[in-house]
Length: 163
Image (cartoon, rainbow, N blue to C red; front, side, top):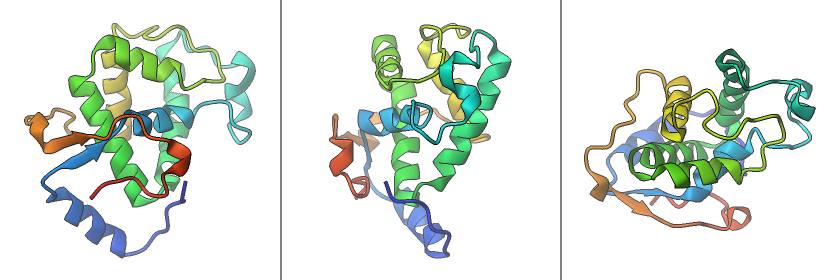
């Protein structure tokens, strides 16, 4: 994945994408988000070997702080693809798909079976949404504004297919 580069063109890209007729989303982009807290070498030690017990909601804040920092490192294209895919998932996926997507990310820390301290997988995803995108609504009024690209081969995607 390409890392974000801070430049003034990002604002123009974000504004242009807001006015696109369809937003392209994929389960792959949601899995990519959860993969940021999976067992990669650069994950903080506290997350490894089940040292952070996620039976307590307070500990999710530590994970989400890390997740937010990692999310911000991606290019504007990746950030938008992940954000819109998560928004779509919260609105239209059933509980089984939300749970399966999270569980298949191979999280490398102790994570109780989803939803653990949350009433549902959807509640957990909304909690993550509100942490990552405070003051931004997750509700989608019109599903027809989205195109689901299906499950993509993440390693072959240079930039998300947003256009």
